[in-house]
Length: 149
Image (cartoon, rainbow, N blue to C red; front, side, top):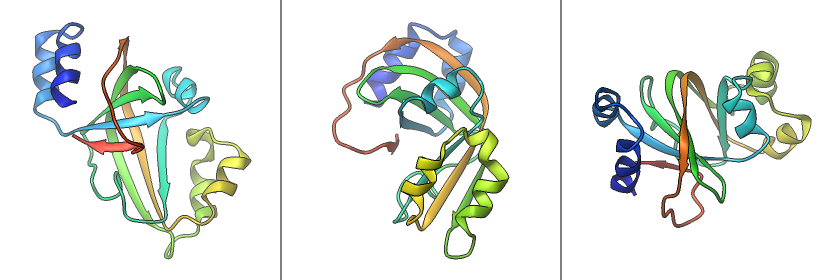
């Protein structure tokens, strides 16, 4: 999957950008609407991942890593660099604190918080720069919504 992605990026990016990407840790994130649209138009500046278990990207992602953005059930549409990452153990921090502090940047609705109320861990990913790409397909198997490549 990594080589398939790099092959497609070679067709779109200048060689210096491509070479820089190759020096970074790359993640594949699967995104759904309307959150994907909010991210692509610059309204959503923090991506969040909540989980019951310590699964990726929790404690597996760092500042300056690259996230390849794939639409759920669709194509790769963009990538972004990471400005900052915050990890929360929700046994130590109330989810309402995260909600109150970051609701504007997360662009999520009330239903989102209801579905995440039983989570134990949260990862907040502050988006630095987002680069839109010409859409391309990769062969991703499985149900994971985050993969460290």
